[in-house]
Image 1 (cartoon, rainbow, N blue to C red):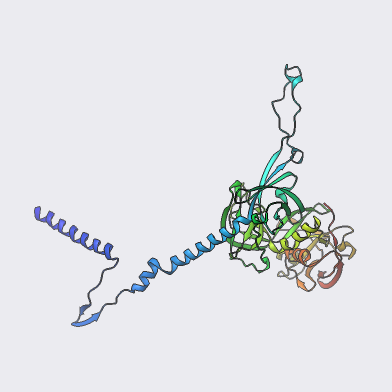
Image 2 (image 1 turned 90 degrees about the vertical axis):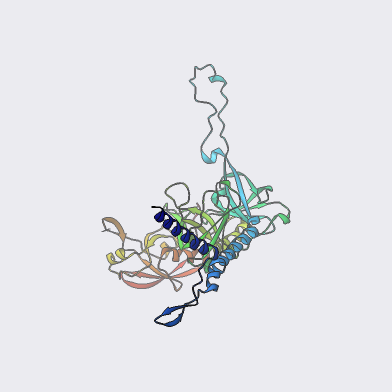
Length: 422
């Protein structure tokens, strides 16, 4: 029994010695040669340089370079990002504050009750400085119906702001503060037209009031549509074209803050999230910087902006609807659903959908004109048409539409007019 116990102890000690050696050196050096049928064969040595790269080299350095890029970007741009705090009137919200519960008329204290006064409500969002004159860009919905606007800078400086101009149709607004120029750090505006899905982006803002919060992600989609604030005479809402979709975390309070590329340029204004519940689930939307560059100078100069209007409502033609209209299933374009009375399209005799068929059990309107081009620019989706109108045309311009009507391609000239007032 003692011999067996000693044998086990010896084995354990030998294993311990071997494990200690592996841990100390990180690798066991093999013998220079091993016998093989009487011939000496060299044993391959480990690639010491490869081991070094894995442990302390290139992959870790790449991560550190990315860290340095993000840290530098934050330190450079965060002073340009502001927290916007607003006071809204109760009249705008329709929610008066009851001081005490309702009492019956014969209650002793009833005659002495003070009149119920609407209580002010507050809200907040984000914004960013665009010039040394104190102009700040934010979302229209952040400052809509605000009686007071206060801007809080990254260093804690507070300043009252005045409203310069608003544009509900793009959900953009410009406010202005009167502070020393050395407090203002304008952030450059980039070119959103050059964005690609997969490109890294950074959001800086004040989610839930947490000032100076930075999140990162990628451009997860392009060319989305987002409902704007304007309403057509038919009751439909005008849409904002070319919306950027991102998975960078965006939450309430981020609205109006910048979405940035890694060069620290604004390529979008964080505007909305899509969620079944309150909070972000990885789908955020930003108004593209190309629209910001178009809208903000006009808001600063005039306080508002006028958009050209075609005067149709419709949707992107899909394969099932194309087949129902005896078109190639691969045909795409914008199927005109309604032509608004007395609109530019009505004056140009465009035709809306006038037939209802069942597609997959759902009643679907078909038979209208299909817009497949505008000024020789291909139109495959509704965003293609709206994006061209908003960014490339002006009130009074004449555009040429390429249209499929009853299976034939025709051209129709339309003179753009101003969108009707909200």
